[in-house]
Image 1 (cartoon, helix red, strand yellow):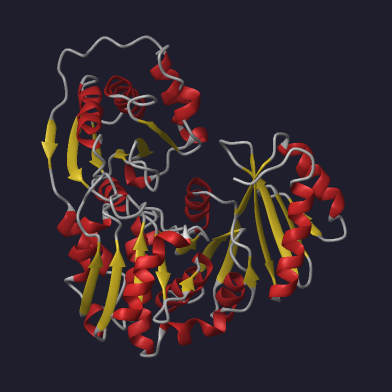
Image 2: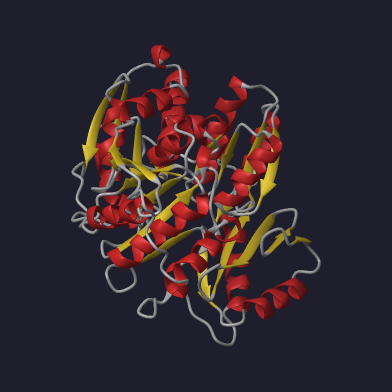
Length: 453
């Protein structure tokens, strides 16, 4: 494995790199074999996105797995949440070949255990890497088999089960799937709903010719916003490349943050199960726990990251979890995340209210937030210690990096798992206070060696 730098591609939650420089078929075959061996399962399920490199690399995963005597259920083209559904429905480990929102030259692998349980650095990925670095195993005498199978129809039924389809009023929806895997799953769901769908960039094209499949960047939502206004749509939906994340805009083409959608979906889930526990990560707005309590639920605060959310969901029995970054987790979806389920729940709520999404969300727009701001910081621990001293008069906690709360604003600063970055999120009661505190924090964070990322 001397020709590959595994430090570059093995991340906290997945494997990701440039093809073929970081990741090629030979290496992916070794990773597929190691994953199959590590799971000790008789079969795994594999899905892939539409990147140019995906067919060859998906075949390499299957070749590696079958060389260890493990059977492969090949879903073919799939969204990541479809792969998670398959791992839950079939009760077998899974591999999704995708680089999510990264540019076209990238690819990667996301892993899960049977029941869609997460695999990350602390839950198996480190051991898989050690197996890849070790000697290549001798192929078993009886290799596994590969079976092509589609679970798209069953997945669509599952997604639709999260809302009352029969009660929905007609809606006009614009969806921008950015030539990614949303082009497969979004129309399959929308055709079952009373929806007039205007679909932007539906073709599956791994070169992403229209704009990057990264909707967290407002520049990539420009076409969606224009189409929402042009079509007088009720809601706009922007999906990332593997379609596990969704971002909404309302009928005025205004952004619906991940926190606002978390609050909206939480209300819907609490109607299904009054008094339920709802998870939110610690960079969600103050609005989220407030709304959960106001509707009789129990908010539970967690670290950022899907492995933490899923673990706490399993421990607490929480019905739903939301992250400000556009990931939404459902207990009845094997605790896995699905942007499309979140979108369908939100559309059901919009239909039920029969008022504009902007009107529905107005009571939740209580605070002003900075969004996540990244700064290059060589010594993250030293800088965090400096911030601890600077804001000692606030309520501090260290669940994930440093969170400091005051009566009229709060911030979280945490280190990246993979890069020399500090990530800052700030929220305040007024835009003026937000601007002042964000500038104040960045001045400290970027003093000395500095830069933004």
